[in-house]
Length: 121
Image (cartoon, rainbow, N blue to C red; front, side):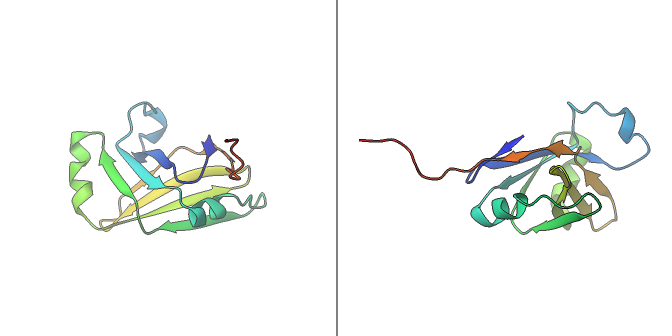
């Protein structure tokens, strides 16, 4: 996955439960969308050591229910985080006030940078 500044990052979220391993990754429960601003992208450009991870709390993000049974999640208190592991590998975690947790599959990523060197006349 490539990341660049001022682009949206969309991550599929799945309810963490005993059926998670049997789920079809093409049909997530929710979609977490966050705009990659300069600060967030800088945080994602780190590559933690093998035994470390970095947790990035998200203040601004959007949730979209992909399954009707999860529409109610949009109306309850929740907190989203991005987790960065060695690789770098990115995943997301959404925690609800009722202690339900949604996670995204881990994705390898490579940040890209726009250095403002566009050719023009």
